[in-house]
Image (cartoon, rainbow, N blue to C red; front, side):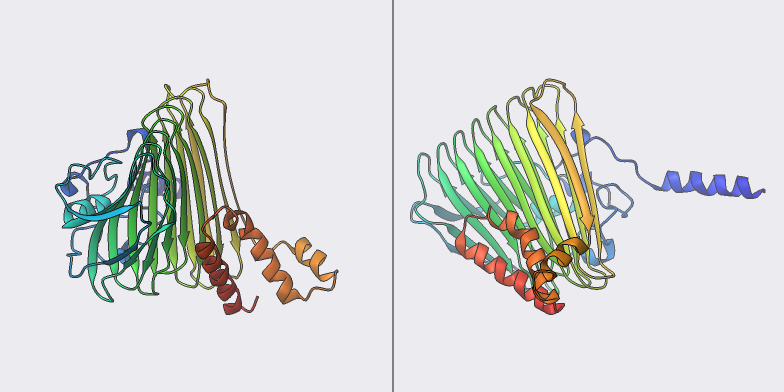
Length: 391
C-alpha cells in the first residue's frame, strides 16, 4: 500500500468515526432513557465533554444513592410546594434532549414547584438553595418555576455542596409575565452537575435568564428557550470562572418558531490554571414561520494563564429572510497588553492593572444582575479568584 493510499484510508476511517452534526431543529427529544443511545463522546453534543468524569450519569450506571437538600426563602406572594412526579404540570416547558436529562427525568421521586400567581408582583426575591447529596453520592432532581399571566418576580437557584447531581429545571413564563432567574453553580471542588434547563415563554412574556458557574469539578448547563406565541423576549446572560482542572460547559439553544420574538445572548468567561477548560455552544434557529425575529448572541473568553483552554462555537440557522436582524460572534484572548500599558503609564501597578482589566471584562454582565446580594457575592468571588493567581 502506498503512503497516499494509507493516508486516504486513515482519513476515511476518521470521517466514519465522527458522528455528523444535524440541524438543531431536527434534534431528538424523549422522556425515555432507552430511546437514547449511550453516548461515546464523538457525537456533536458530547465531543467537548470529558465522558469519564461524568461518573456514569450518561450510561445508566449512576444509581441514586442520596438526595439534594432544598431550602427556600420565598417572597410572601410566591408559593413553594413539593409534588409527586405524576403532577400534570411537570414537563410543560420542554422534553429532555439527551440521555442524562432523560435519566434525570425518569429518576426523580419528587419535584419542587415554585409558583408566582397571576397578576402578582413579588415584593422580594425568592431564594432556593440546593445542597448536593454529599461526596461520593449521586442524586437526581426536578425544579419548575411558574410565572403565571402578568406575574413578576425574581428567583435565585443557588447550587452548593458536594456530590454528583443531574436535573431538569423548567421555567414556564405565562402571557405578559416578567421573570428574572439567576442560576448559580458554586459547588465544592469534587462536584459534578449536569443540568438541562427548559425555558418556555408565552405571548409578550419577558425572561432574563442568568447562569453563573464558579465551582465544581465538572459542570454542564444546557438552557433551551422556546416561544409559544408572538411577542416574547428572552435575555440569556452567563458568567463563568474556571480554575485549574475544572470543566465548565454551557450549551444554549434558542428556538424561534413563532413570529415577532426577540432573543439576546451574552456569556463571558475567564480561565486560569493548568487544565482549566470552558466550552460555550450557542445555537439559534430561526424557523420559516418566525418572521420579524430579532436575535444576537455573543461569547467572550479571557485566558489568564498558560495551560487553560476555551472552546467557543456560535451557530445561527435562518430559514426565512423576513427578519428584523440576526447576528453572532465569539472571541477568546489573553490580557490586552495595550490596556495594561495604558494603566501602568498612569502610575497604576501591574498587579492592580490586571485586576482592573478583569473587573472591566465582567462589568457588563455584573451590572445586568439586578439582585444586589448575588452581584456582591460574584464580585467577591472574582476578587478571590484573582488573588489566587496574584493578579
